[in-house]
Image (cartoon, rainbow, N blue to C red; front, side, top):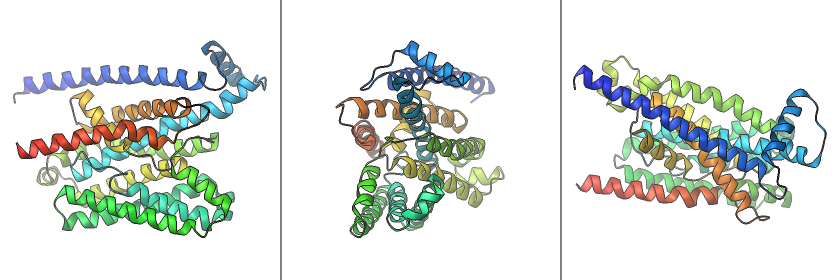
Length: 352
């Protein structure tokens, strides 16, 4: 490919990136408006702007609508957007690590590992959690996610077939779920209720402390992942090429594992296991961009994950109101078909 052709291709990808980001930004804005205005209490967009402006100026009235907006819907909406983007980027990092588009926190059992350790913490150390807050849950989830990631990585050295590795990940996930269910037997009724609600995946009850925790953890982690864009692109072209470019492969792999585990752990700790989003969204983003370059794909993946999660949470909250669906139910309904399509397409490519 000549330098002129490379410049034209790069220009095309950058123009498409801008268009995709504008499209996703518009969808996110639409999702934001719909989420904060709809529900058992309808709040007109004009009133939303007025109440937000009053809150900025410190002139809150304390009305019912204002409390619903500022204390319930807005923190929930922001948490869904941040964690949706974080989980999507976590999936992208895992897919880059394993060089396979079907790898993801849920399929590889990483989310279940985080769920197991968080569940054990909630059951046996609930008194400690009251004082430590959400950071303790994130730490517990990180330990579980990292433990399962290392286990899957160990198996990946022995099992070269990615399909078999996915089966291993699914089985590890079942084992983690079995351990969690066994420990629930010894929990008191209140812990069982809390754990059951959390384990299905939900943003219900999200508060500003949760949003702050998500911002402090997810934003720097995603930024760190974006700063690794060039090494990631070199790694995707082959280990030999990456080494010739001076990339320290072992350190790079450790960085990817830590970053992806921390992102998926934060999501699991604050919202519970959210299925299929981490696999489906990176694939959707690559399809929209017509490119897999991490420098473009990571910010687009984060924004696409935010849009996907915000819209899924809107459906979960309003589809059968006043009954609320688990967020994992909705993301599975939309994400699983994408994964099935990816697996069928990959199988055809291998046979072709």
